[in-house]
Image 1 (cartoon, rainbow, N blue to C red):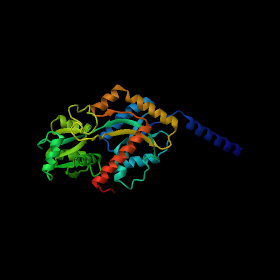
Image 2: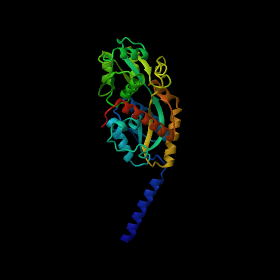
Image 3: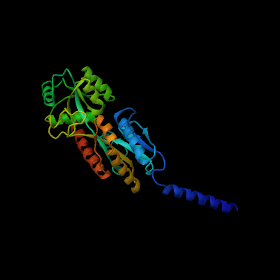
Image 4: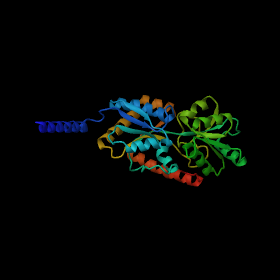
Length: 322
């Protein structure tokens, strides 16, 4: 009698497990991992996206901030998660294309450790300068720096940050020397641009636009190939005379590797549907973002290209990595 009960119990557990495995996805809330602090541009965009993703998948999508190491802690935790579709990383491009080059101790294979779902939106940096500096465009800034080699400095969110490398790329393409002043984040750097302690900085448009519109800093150029919708009167670097300078950041979705094909397809479909939602596009555009959806294969290819580009910039700038 006891033996039959054990068999009955075991059979019941197996049936439950089988039913759970075959249950339509998603059958429970989804975690959307963000590698940056609450309130910042990545977190704000992720929370906007989470609402629409939840509506599309008919399940709550809960944003979970796992901060540290420029997004690498979040990336590593994502790589270790079960590939069941319930852990998704809302990743900013530097985590894949810059941070692994700066943090040599990062133990990730960025091609093998993730399933790439697709690109969501692109963002651009804008070069903003202290209003009292006597330059009105990029060519005047370059000329001023060459004439006054010790007078021009730029701030960044830290050594190896994307805005640090954006300035290093400008230096390399114009043959100009300028002093790098690293900060712990963009906000204190912006304060010192406004106060005149440093000359300029590159900042993401979503956070720079209020300072530009309130006339606290002057915008000289955006780094994207096309003009930014949030700053239509500001030229691109290429328009400003810096040949082949075209750099954009982006937000994308990645999951642990070996994600089942049906879940991968469902997420790609949801992403494409959200991208066509007028309200989502309006919200992102207001923050200076450009909706730019791609599939996983194209996203991985883009990440590889940009990884190689930033590796070249870092090597030429002789930036020390750890």
